[in-house]
Length: 141
Image 1 (spheres, rainbow, N blue to C red):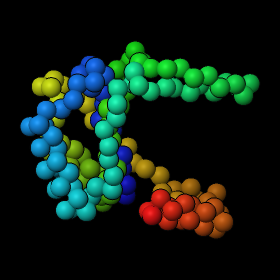
Image 2 (cartoon, rainbow, N blue to C red; image 1 turned 90 degrees about the vertical axis):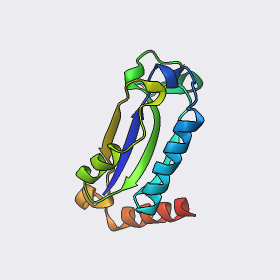
Image 3 (cartoon, rainbow, N blue to C red; image 1 turned 120 degrees about the vertical axis):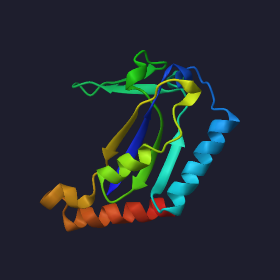
Image 4 (cartoon, one colour; image 1 turned 45 degrees about the vertical axis):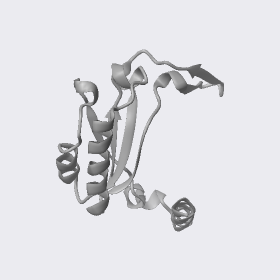
């Protein structure tokens, strides 16, 4: 099972406050543990929403671009991991070990399971499955 671990933004990450060397060191060690355990597939930190944009699609086919920053910090992400684990419970146990929170404040991390091809049942035809596998091979390099 793959899970995306979503690190929620806070006033510090939205202000562009970078983690200090101590937290970077702890996070580096934690990421090393994830890699050694074969759990971590990917992960990155995200710039504040002030450097981003949202795309809004209308029923009429219109597309609207809204530049950041975005007001609701609780709805924003500061970073993510993608983990390969056996269960949601295993992901929870790993998240309990995340060296958080940044800046000595509170933090929130969300765990979301990633869809796999088999989750789509018969809608995932052999042709679509082949296409998906081809795309994953390109992504893998």
